[in-house]
Length: 334
Length: 240
Image (cartoon, rainbow over all chains, first blue to last red; front, side):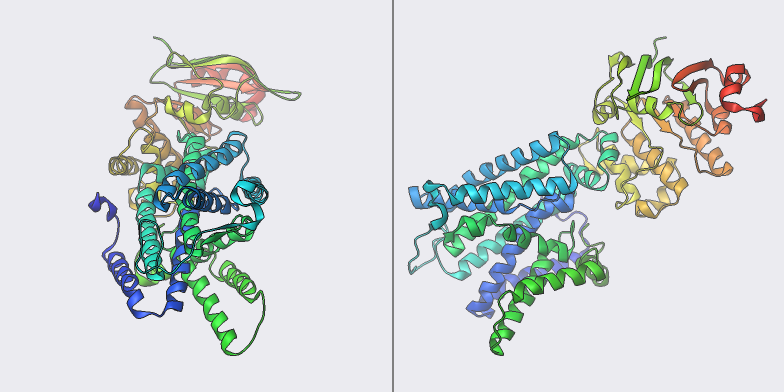
C-alpha cells in the first residue's frame, strides 16, 4: 500500500515533499500565533481546493457551488455537537453521507438529463443558493441568527472534541491536507482516475471507449462532496460560528476554487501552491496596508481578481506546471 | 456460419430526411466488410447506430446473438464493438500511452497490466517511440493510428473504422492497410466506412454500397465496381 502510494513519484519530488512536510511539521515552533493562523487558513484552502479539484481538475465537471458541501458538513457536525454533544469526528461520519447524498442529487439531475458545462455550473450555484436561503429560514438550525459553538479557555487540547489551541487546529488541517493529497495521488493513478481524465478530455470519446460516463461522473461528485464536507466541519470548529449567509454564499464557493485555478487545475500541487500564493500574498497585502495606515475595504477581493488575471494571461495552466518543470519534478503531477 | 453482426431493416429519420432507409446486411466473423457510398449516403449515420451513438427509428442490430440497437455507446463497446471517429478524437491532453491505457482498463482493473497491454498495442501500431508524447501534438496519421490502438485496447470482436484512411498519403494508407490485414488475420472482424477505394479494394472481402440511405449493391469489391448502378451513382466515369 505504502509502496503503491509512492509509485510514479520521482526522487526529486519525494525529496521536495519530505522537505515541505518537515517545514510544515516544525512551523508551530517557529512562527507566531498570527502567522500560524494564516498557515491554518492556507491549509484549509489547500484542502478545500484539492477536494474541488477532484471534480473539476480530474473529471472536468465545473462546480461553482461547492459551498453547499462545506456548509452541510459544518452544519451537520455543529448541530450534532451543540444539540447532542456528539464529537466532531463522529459528526464527520454523519456529514460525509449527507454531503455525498447532496452531491448525488445534483449529479443525478445534471448527468441523467445531459446538463453539462456552463449549465451544470449554474445548477451547482442554484443548489448552493437553495441551501443558503433554506438554512437562513430554518428555525431548527437558528436560521439567519447563526449557530455558535461554545467557546471557553481550554487548559488542554481536546483533539477528540476539536477544542483547543491554534496549534492543534494547525496539525489537524495539516494532517487532513496531507491525507487528501495522498488520496488524490492514489486516485489519479487508479482505474477510476484514468476514466475521470478520459471524461475530462473528451466525454464522447470516453463513452466510445466503453466508459460508463454517468457512473464515473457520479463517483467524482460524491467523492469530491464527501472530502469537502470535512472542510466544513473544520471551518465550524475553528471559527466556532456558522451563518448561512456566509457559509453557503457564492463567494465561499469561488474562494475555494481560486487556489486550484491559480496553482494549476488537475495537478496535485496546484491547490496547495495556489492557496499559498493567494492567501499568503493577500495577508502580506493586508499587513502592509495596516502598517502604512491605509484602509481600503475590498482590497483583498481586488487583489484576488488581479492574481486571477495575471495567471489567466501569463500562465493559463496555473503556476505549478511551469514551476514543476523548473524544479525538475515532472509534469506537475498531472 | 452465423454472422457476427446482423443489421436488419435499419432506418433512421432526421425530420423529413430518411438518412438510412431499411438497410440490411450481415458481417460474418473474421470478415473485413466495407461500406462505401457518396457523401450524404448515410454511411456515418449507419455507423453511429451500430456504435450506439444514436438509436434507430426502425430495424434491429444483432451482435454475437444479442440485440444491441438502442444501447448507449459505452454499453455497445463493453459488448465488444469498438470504434474510431471520422474526425479523430484522442484524449488531447493525455500522453499517447495513457490514451491507450484507458482503453485497456475497460476489461482490466490493474493499471500496470493495462499499461503493459497498451505498450504492446503501441508497438504494433508504430507508436511505441512516441508513447510519452501528448496526443494533441501528434500528426494526423499518428492520431489515426492512436485511435485504432485505443479502440483495440478495449478488446473488441468487431472494429468499426470511420474513414480511417482519409487524409493519409498513399504510403501511409498502405501501412494502415498492412496493419489492419495483420489484425484481421489474428481473428478481428472489421467493418469500415471508406472513401479511399485503393484501401477498400485491398482490404475488403465484401462491400455494401449506400446511396441516399438505400443499399444499392452488395458483393465482393470486384463485383461491386462493375455494378452499373454503383458506377452511375458513386464511382462515376473515372472508374469505368
